Amino acid sequence: MDDLIQETIDSARRLIHTELETGLTLARVASVARYQDKIDRNRANARKAYDTALKYIARIALPSGESAEIQHKLEKLKRELQQLGEAI
Image 1 (cartoon, helix red, strand yellow):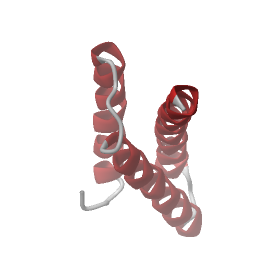
Image 2: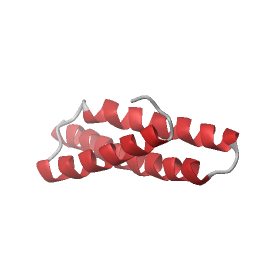
Image 3: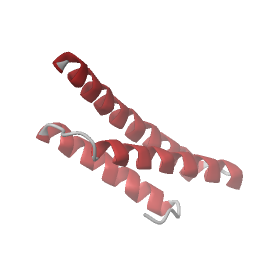
Image 4: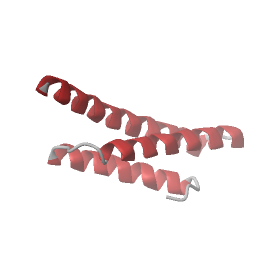
């Protein structure tokens, strides 16, 4: 049972990292896009990634070093989303 719990935690940690990296990429794409529909679509998907990461961060305990790295990425994504007009 402990292996299953650890595997679940590891999966959640990978998901958080993936969502933050994806969100940052989508926010960058939105910030350089020329057409409003592309800006809106990428901004909305970056926001979904941000919200998903927040949801999982609240559910698991992270080692302090990893927690600091995740918080840094989360704040960076938040700033980029705010620059794109998201109310966070």
